[in-house]
Length: 218
Image (tube, rainbow, N blue to C red; front, top):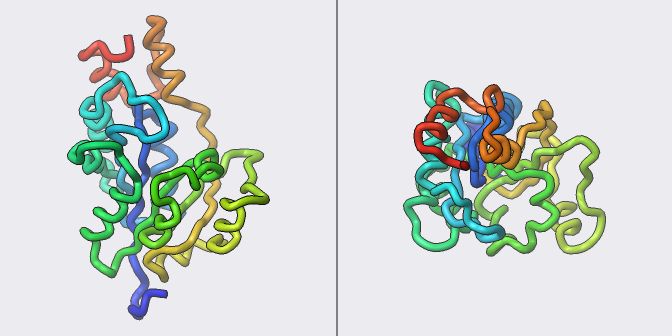
């Protein structure tokens, strides 16, 4: 429990490969800011993912596309810290780094997809994540928490039902947030481009221009 009398201001971080960033990412990010009353949400491109093959598109290009996509929206930012750190991009390292930059008037919230939480115990130093931040799980239609095992026990211990915990405690809780479903995937965008078809209206025009200028995903 945070001892300060005044409510905390939550800062969110949303990691991923963003390969490329699209409207599904961006709309979810903005709705999270509004539903959770975040000060801002940082989209943090992963440089070297620990659980999948590194994307063919460079981390620099992926971050540049995120920066183009969020330009002009004051509540969304691109966070490049994983590009500036050598080696595998472990989430715990990024959260610790970000926590050190924030003062105690801010809580820290990490956003993750509902599929990721089922295997969160495979993450590097996963049991330390809630010592640094809250976790908000984006719920998909028909999705359910695991009901048994290590992750289920961990969730039962830390699950919170109301977002006001983000304004009260600096870290330690898991929340579920349902958002408007937008059935767009980076895989779909890449496949359209690879097949010579247009992904226009699935991602911002400025991102599509960047892709076409650099002949990415062909």
